[in-house]
Length: 360
Ligand code: SF4
Image (cartoon, rainbow, N blue to C red; front, side, top):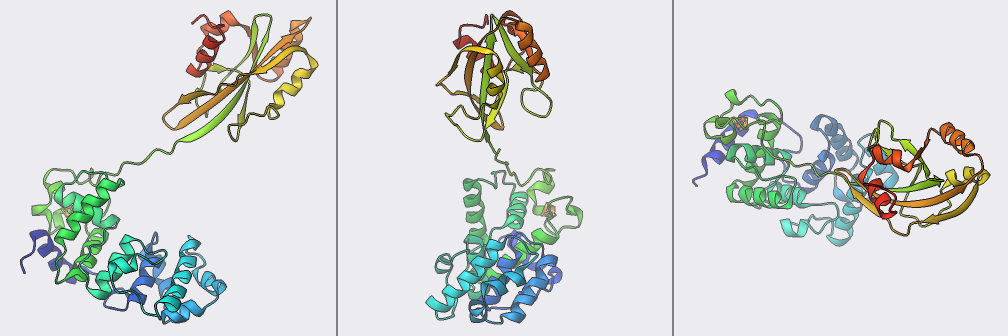
């Protein structure tokens, strides 16, 4: 059979460089499955003693299925991600009860098992049953992206499909298990994430990244920004043309800009009860308290801000008292004209515009 030069080199490299690991050189799907589940998000050195412990306590899938959850979790202790242990146990029971203790023997049927995704199904199907289906994990993404010069984002669905399709084209139908083991081992030992020793690499003459000085840039992984939603309730406290403002502090958005006394809410609540600040104002005579129905929305790179405003009109004989109160709270009482000169978040400007109070 004629292989792609990439496959030839890989299969040549593997037997001389592979680590001797207890789950290699077996066709037993239970042992392969156990090792794959234990090694998810876990380094080999950390996972190895757990694998040995599990196999010693549960030599067959039925032994694992018959164990109590407490025993399984105790053996798992220290490995983290306990849902993996629960899924492992649950899946063992399904294999005992629905499959007569024998693992399903194809990629598609393995995918039906709880906790078995495309990667684990491909690993079991190829290692145990020699089904030519490629495993694509982080190591495989990296090796393929660098060698073939693929800049598609590996975090996206399109990238996953593209890499899976390439790996499935490359996998030799007569040596699928060896190919899968080899490419993962090559990524783990030779084509490592940081500073791979390319000068000593057998692949270098055909490697796109090496020849084009792109080793550090491939693979491409675009981190999705996690957008946080925040809900602000502002108190717009005005007294004879003056307004209570505060300058925003360091360590949060809009540092140094001016807005109003604020209460951050856990959700988009309509209730005014949370406005603790307003209780203080009870000492002053207020003529009206009204709340905007509208929620102002402001979008930042990492945050989505929703804000509404409670307007409080204060009537007071001695405005100094309000001034003192504001100072004690770390606010200022300033004129609307002065406020116009100060830097404000756009959301505040918009609110003031709506109130026809801003001169902007
Ligand atoms: S030459 Fe470098 S980047 Fe290319 S496959 Fe080898 S180790 Fe990876």
